[in-house]
Structure formats: structure tokens, C-alpha cells
Amino acid sequence: MNEPKSQTAQATQGSGLGTDNSTHSYIGPGSGFSVLFLLILFVAYWMYDQGRQAFEATDVAAVPAPSADLSGFDPALGYLPDDDMLGFVEIPAGEFLMGSNPAFDRQAYENERWSQSQRQGAVTLPTYYISRYEVTVAQYQAFLNSTGHSHVEQALTAPANHPITNITWTDALAYTRWLQAMLTENSATPAALRSVLDAGWLITLPSEAQWEKSARGSSGAIYPWGIRVREDAANFNADATSAVGSFRCTACQFGLSDMSGNVWEMTRSPLQPYPYSEDDDMEILGEDALFVMKGGSFSDSAANIRAAVRGGVDPGVRSETIGFRIALSNSNMQ
Image (tube, rainbow, N blue to C red; front, side, top):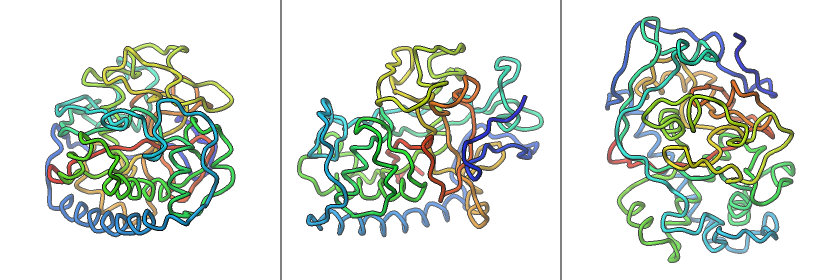
């Protein structure tokens, strides 16, 4: 079966990736990851400080505020969902199956295979949170208005409640740092979320494993809702994005929206062969790394909106089919 293709030359699927004979059943701490995490903390602090200073610069007006009536989203808090956790959904600690078994999923691609000797791998993650919806145009506009961050005109052409697109991986990471600073300093941040932030949790892009567990749950489902494709459950084989949350997924274990289709979602994980581990991420970051994107887009077929599909995006690429959602990770548990 052919690997899925992206509409952007640099945003390619990870075809032809090699595999090895090792297997992983637990994602645990390691020296390589410790160095990587210290580097991430340094970058996170720097970007936090930049975001804090930008948040204080209230006279910046990069783009107009959204004019649409966005019911259920709070304009005082960057148009995040109006609930106690501002749209963050808790994903409990535990194990899940990652990758694909062609015996059960005949659409599986080779780069979804765990190793030469194992088709899928069991991965254990600590508790984390992930956003119920993809980041919207309105939410990204709030970031632009606060910071004056550079953007292209195409990024703001979709309706305010559609996912933001035509932004780069580095743009997405900048948004997460600004959001951390804004919510930390905003007195309107709900107490439930504030307690998590005060405990040292970081807003960032999800890892590939976090994203995949959130999408398929502990059962290892092929699609977020089960084993068969459903046209009423996702925006795919279509011409454009839809408003976030348009396809409610009552059968999804964690109640998240648009984990299949709508837009590809960028993660913080560099694209490399399975078995999955964060311990060696530093090694590939020294190269011209691609970053994993998941979920497929409105323009993709049913095969490309499966939970295990692995796409790769260059950190400088912009595309109308690529966006992101955000996660909350406990820095003390890494």
C-alpha cells in the first residue's frame, strides 16, 4: 500500500523509515531525555519571559479582534473554551497500544510498525491534559494581537471558530509559550487550571505518544470512535475545514473533537522510526528534523485519518491542511 502524501513537498509522510529489533513497553526517564528536557525547560523559560513581556505590551495591535459571536469561548482568556479547565481534558496515567497491526488494520503503513519482531508496542504515560478542540483562528488572533508575532494573511482567512492553519511548527510553539504566560498572569484564569499551572505544568504541543493515546484510548482503536470509518464522525474527503467541534464524538473514550480529519495536528516529537522513545530525540534534532503530525486533514482519505498514521512536517512549512492542538504536561514527572 502506498504511504500517504502531503500537499506540501516538505510536509511529507515518513515513508521508508527503518526499524530495529528492540522493543519498548514503558517510556521511562533516561540520560538522553534528561538533557533534552533541560534544554526544553531553558527554551520554555525564555519563551515564557518573552510571552510575559508581550502580554504586558497592551498597545500592540497586529490584527483585528474576532468579530463573530463565539458562544462557549471566553474572549477575556484568549477565546479558550469557557469551562473550569478552559478546554483541557485530563488523560489518566496508564498504558496504551501504539502503532498498527496489519492483521487488524489492513490500511496500516510500514512506518506504523513497532519493530521487525513486534507490530505494536505498549507505552505507559503519566497523567497529562490535552485540549478538547484544535486551536482556532480566534485563539491565534488573540496571540497575534498581544505579541505582534509575524503571520501570513492566509492564516486568518477562515472563520474565527475554524482551526488555525498556515502557521509553522515554531509559530505553534510560540503560541503555547505566550498562552502559558497569559494564563499564569491573568486573574480571570479559573482556579482549577491555575492550581495545575502553579504546580509546574507546562503548556506545549503534545508528544506523539500523548496525541495517539488521546485519539485511540487504551483499547488501541483504529479510529478514535472504533474500528470502522464513519462519515458522520470526522471532516475528511472534503474541500475545506469545519468549525471545531462540528463532529461530536460521543464514542471517543476521552470526548475529544476532530482527532481525525479537519487538519493535521503537529506534535513536539521528531519523526523517527519506532519503537517510540523520547530518550534519543536530541540525536535527531541535530539533523534536518521533521516533526510528527497526526490525524489527517479535511482533504485526506479514510486511510489517512486513522489514529496511528504518522506524517512528518518541516518546522518552517505552512499549509492550509496543517494546524495543532495543545497539551499540559507535568514537568516534575518527566
